Amino acid sequence: MTELLIKGGTVFTAEGPRNADVRVNDGVITEVEPGLTAAGRAVDASGMYVLPGALDVHVHSRDPGFPEKEDFGTLTAAAAAGGVTVVLDMPNTVPAVDSAGVLESKAALARSKARVDFGLWGLIRSTTTAEQLEAMADAGAVGFKAYLAYSFSLSRKQVLYSPNGDDPDLESPADYGTLARLAPALAHLGLPVAIHAEDPTVLAAFRRPVLTYDDLLASRPPEAEAVAVSAAAAVARDSGFHLHIAHLSSALGLQAAEDAVSLGTPMTLETCPQFLHLTAEDFGRVGAAMKMLPPIRTRADRDALLDGLKRGVISVLGTDHAPHTDAEKSAAFGDAPSGSPGVQTLYLSSLQLARDAGDVWLAPGWVSTAPARLAGLQESKGSIAPGFDADIVIVDPRSKTRVSSEGMRSRQRHGALEGLEFDFAIKHVYLRGESVARGAGKPRGRMVRPAPALR
Ligand SMILES: [Zn+2]
Image (tube, rainbow, N blue to C red; front, side):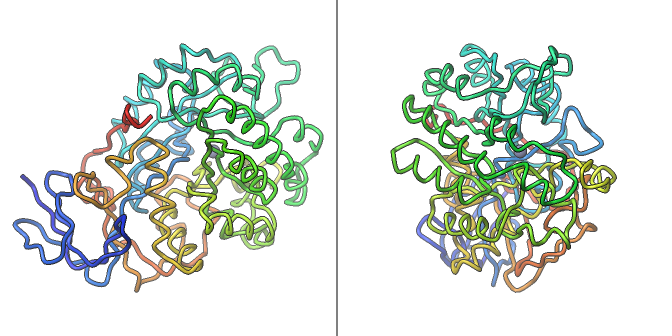
């Protein structure tokens, strides 16, 4: 039996922070008590925080499909370095994950490279059937994702960031009708349904050439988010499926979501660290590294999202980690693709937000406990308590970390948060009791599946 004892730290527990030692046997936490004595390996965590590993519910591995941008190896090396011990990968890889067969082959590929645990989202297309949803759930999908404004290329088997127009190769995007048609099956399966919440008709009305950051903001108005949230919530409310709003970006979208929650809609809200650390005013300093969809908006939007997070209406922080190559991102603004890496800075950026909000201990809830619940993993991940996987991050609150391209493990090294400094440093990261932060050794990541009883 291999043992690890983490001694003398301040441990995040369900009852709040607590001075305690943490004993791990064979990858599982067995005791959280003061004054434990070591029989095997011991790590001194005096003055440090002992936190549950983060689950990033929103990453794009690009694998299979775009190995030049990222793959499961580089994604999970970045995750491990940043204290993220589970990544939930979105289904818009190529071929898109729209069936159990594709999900199973993607799982096999990920298993061969993953340095942290991973889960897979399945795709809802406008033609998806209830049987396909059920088969993906049986194959282990953690939930489903609908890209409301994006069409599907039948020949390339790819979600495309473009409207369908008249091209016979492009299948119409999943829409509110798709969700309504599939609602009974979605409610029965009990898995979350994440949406990319931008309404295509609002986007169409504001379409324009995007040459500047102002063009980007004008082409993606917050009304598109608010309308999509309200309409999807109206469908979910009646049928009872669990709606998850990905990357909430605007005050208007948040208001629409709060209205829906107050009516009893079963839904969770996610926003991203980049929407909370940056505003449109940062564009002059950051440049195209902060080009993403939906966009980073105004100070008022940022303040509203921060307030929603502090009040607990927004429960989940995910990164929408979406790397491209540095060369692609250096193109003229209009041509640069949308997206930024983020998984490696999730934990530290969230700790900073929580400290600035007045309670550093809010952060593990946003990045670990609430995400574990969303993924149906609340009995094995997201807490430091006996019986849970020993996915543990030791953070030093007396050291600082400056986000710089040199330390980045993703293929895209220049991200939106580059240059920011956080008042914390990650010292150790354990995946089921084994150290993974430095990326050495064999890939040990396993696929996570929602516990059936929790679905
Ligand atoms: Zn995304």
